[in-house]
Figure (cartoon, rainbow, N blue to C red):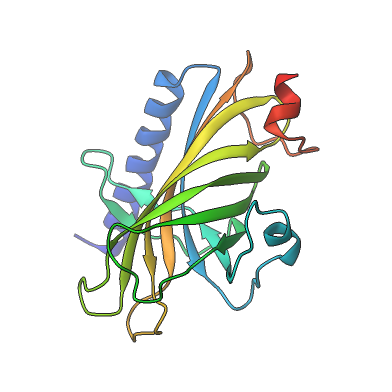
Length: 202
């Protein structure tokens, strides 16, 4: 298969996936999937961690990318190279051996094309030796606490890799799924002001 044919196949898969998403998504909900990777060009925003409900001792700045999936099995075929936004993550670590099963508080803001989404919750450490000792795998479950106008709430979850010892060949980053509800409106990239979710419910 030529490079041109492979490119056409990826584009067709993306278009098909977008069509399915538009056809099946309810008008009051939206699901977004994106990837973050720690990036020295986008340092963490100190104001984000200052608003966290805990004192963060690890602060990470990242770029946001949009991966492409195969429509028939969901496998990521392109991790994305064009920055679609930025993110700041704030973590409270107390055990730097990273024991599996430990839960750590996590607070983050994702500056996406529609605007900033802020979420708070915990990450559970899954392992500290796969595929090699010192690399930490984790899963995060977060509640949406701030969002663009019109949203009434939602969740953000992740599969995350943390490379605290800077092992070669690995990057700190995550694949995220954002699932949000918006009362009575189809979701669209719109921008605007960004009140808290609690304000939206009053």
